[in-house]
Image (cartoon, rainbow, N blue to C red; front, side, top):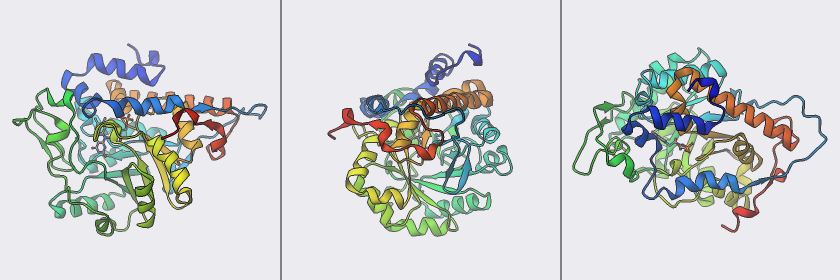
Length: 364
Ligand code: FNR
């Protein structure tokens, strides 16, 4: 179908299911075991009700946001996703070009299918990038990657902490892996006795001994870049992150791909409001998993998120290459602007908890 007929984020998934190879769609769409968390992620946003205020001159709205000191034209960014080349020959380059043309930030995956330098070059000269980091058991390799990132002008490191071992994604596991590798991490995909799960075989290098005490080493190796912990799932760990002085946390269950039956990020955010609201002023909090509508973004912002991450939809939009990426961003931006006008705010800074009723999400 022509790109202009894509009017909702969900439309891109329908196209991807039709046009991507069975293996590609399985890898992108799959989640751990019974897909409970994957489903609950979207469901959690549906359960939150909006509480519009009226008569507030909403003709002009601004959705610009500063994320870790980087200007972003929208309060969302592209969450790191591996192997974009499976979807389109330009893979991450097309995503980077689309992000550059619209002023949005791409978090490059440690398992990206193009070299980091090529991806950064594909953006505009001043386009900010973040790097997602899986720490390698061979720490020397991680030191080298962080040095490269710093030299390339990457603005922050998102350390993924919810996947010391890979999740069990059965749809991906059942199909053969093919010959793939990531020039960023050096990971290669090979079939083994267990099957061909790309997520699993490409995660073999990840250091499952990583601990809180390693964070200063990561910061030092990156030359002092801001650190964000990706995959925080409890208020207790959110507080620990604040105590360790990181600049941000991404509340996430890895799109339901890591441990199934974990809670959606929105519930972790509510937990933080109840147990340690003071950390909302100490670091930036982001949310990802299941965000498919402008109203979903608004709900996270209302509950104090600085920004949200979008994962699978960008992989699906790659069915149309760079233009698809741009079109997806436009759909989400338009929906967010409309939602803001309809709840009576004109700037993302005006989002506040009074705009949402979370009664259906509670008790935990
Ligand atoms: C991911 N995700 C991920 N996260 C990460 O830290 N490093 C990675 O390499 C990947 N790779 C990856 C591949 C694919 C195909 C998917 C779908 C996801 C998780 C990702 O960053 C994010 O947390 C979720 O995708 C967010 O959920 P939604 O938006 O996909 O529902």
